[in-house]
Every structure is written in structure tokens, then in C-alpha cells.
Length: 222
Image (cartoon, rainbow, N blue to C red; front, side, top):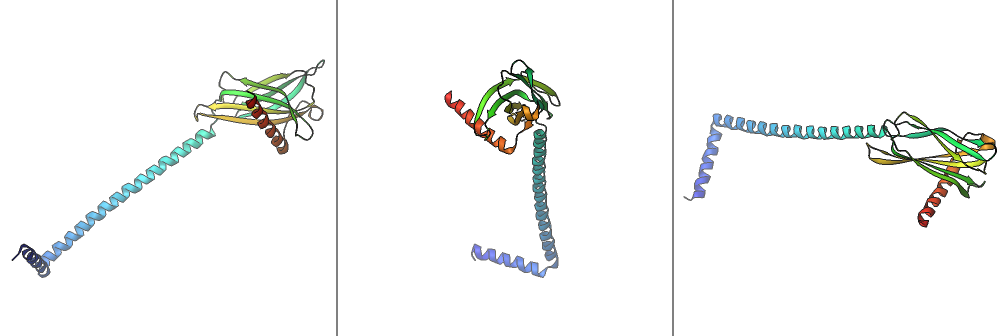
């Protein structure tokens, strides 16, 4: 008898013994049940760990997103109001422009630069002339919830109608980014007195087009 035949014979005897023995049948049944239960327990434990990990990761992502949105909501945000151009001297055409600037955000505006561009335009808003440009750099951070007056002179002003562009450029030390805010105003001494008004969409579009061309020409001449 070969080893193979002997092995087959032993397997058959074991199988017949199981078939003829109720005790062995029960032992085999409960063994299978135990093994199955163990496998199921291991699977559900793995599943629970996987689900818990996914939930934890989603909670972390959600928390990061909420934190980021909160930081964005607290960014510095500058507005200007009470802008006016008033005559400073009746003997000459000297005027004074002043406005108030407020930081509506919850963090200070760092490295603040205030740019002014005074323009004169024809009736069609196709031709503009630069009357005055000015850039002022603030040495100290501009705190939140603070209003700051700002003033500059317009000497020997020959025009009674002006378009004014106000630029605010600053950095946020939390988001580590630079923000540029632009406001457009119009002044007509005969119709509005000393007060400024915000420009219409058509006027803003024309001014933006001119400013882009103006800045491009400045870069090309340097």
C-alpha cells in the first residue's frame, strides 16, 4: 500500500466515524459555529475601526473648514465713506479731499497702502486725463473697528468734475495673503456740492479699462 492510498484510507475512516458518531457531529458543528463567530467578530471589529476612522477624518476636515471660514470672516475689510472735495482757498482753485476709512474686520490691516487716482473725463467716458496720483503707506497696522480720517490737497484744480479711484492694499497676518480693494467715486461741484457719489456700472467699466491701459503704459515706459 502506498502512502497516498494510506492517507485516503485514513480520511475515509475519519469521515465514516463522523457520520456514525453523534458526538463527533456535534463537536464538528460547534467547532464550525465557533470559527464562524470568531471570523464575524473580527470582521465587525475591523468594520467598526474603519467606520470610526472615516468619521474621525471627516470631523477633522469639517473642523478645518469651519476654522478656515472663521478666519476668512475675520479678515480685515476696509470701507470709505463721507468722502468730499471742498474748496480750501477762494483766491485760487485749491481744494481739499478728505474721507473716513474704517476697518470692519476683526484683525488689523498690516502694511496698508492707500492709493488715490484723480481723473478727468470727456462726456463719452472714452478719454481720461490723470490729474493727480498719490500713494500713502501707513507705518502702523490699521486696527479693527477703528475709523481713521484721511486728507490730501488738490492744488490749482481747473476741473469741476472728477472721477476718483481709491485703492486699499494690505496684508492679513493670519491668512498670510494680500488683499486689494478698489472703490470708484464721482464728484461734480455744480450738481453735488462737496459730496462724492459712487459711480454707475457703466462709469466703473470705463474707468477700469483706462486704469488697466494706464498701468500697462507705465510698466512699458520703465
